[in-house]
Image (cartoon, rainbow, N blue to C red; front, side, top):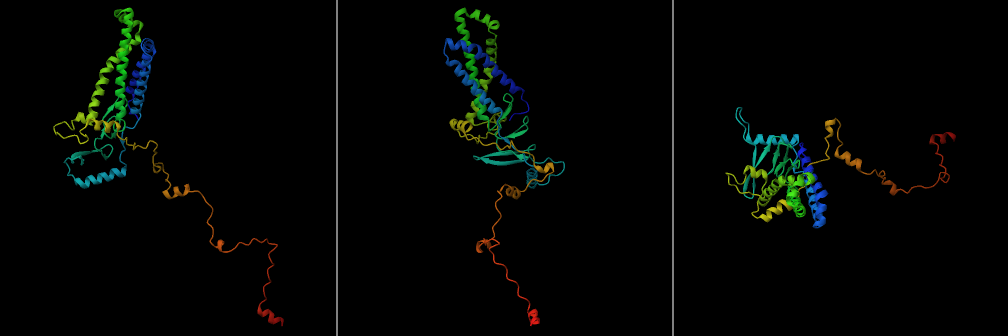
Length: 338
């Protein structure tokens, strides 16, 4: 499940695939012979794990909350009008907020005018995806998807593994240059690198500029995981602002917070990916529940009459049956014959 803007996601794939392909094609063969064959093996493991977590983050449901149906939206509007009463003309209506208590802390449930629902705690509406996302963290253009309750752990594992992969490739590029310098000298190696070894120069530049951003992002999200806090809450200052309200979702223990965020049970998706539009919109009437259940039942034999169990069936053939007796003549005819 990806957002409408996918260009930066393809750039992410290109940078990871391109850098690792150059590393495996040029430096890994030399390092495997000179140092250890485990170097390309460990690099391949980091690469595959990074790609798997990236694709899982990009193509999974982040926790999208379905929009209210017309009947549900009308019912919520009636509840709001009954609660707030009629608003005089010229006056601004009161904010649509419900108070909810979590761990002795009052949390406000805000109304989404786009989805026509009261958002659950920690949920927010993404302007890019145009959906309300449960435990909304942020929208990441590099993965092409929102980061929410159902894919945050995969996003964190992606940036963590990508940080390790970037450090790994950058470090062994330096080792490669050092080994070459021992043979022909450091200055000669630097002179030959742009012309003779252009892939090495490309890898070093990409890893150098990627290293700071990815490693810094991993450290920031490690800090958020330890506090059981989201990026959206940190930017808004929900728990560290002027209100001085404590985070009701934090357990006060780093280990418990990390276990809940990264190892807790993953809720199922509430989206119906195979759903179709109702048949009323196309002009045909859907079959009723009784008709549908009747059509699915197997057609058995016809019911048997109870009299067939009480009366024995006559199995004689027509030839064996005695001829019928002639009917007696009426009494008037017999008197006339006399």
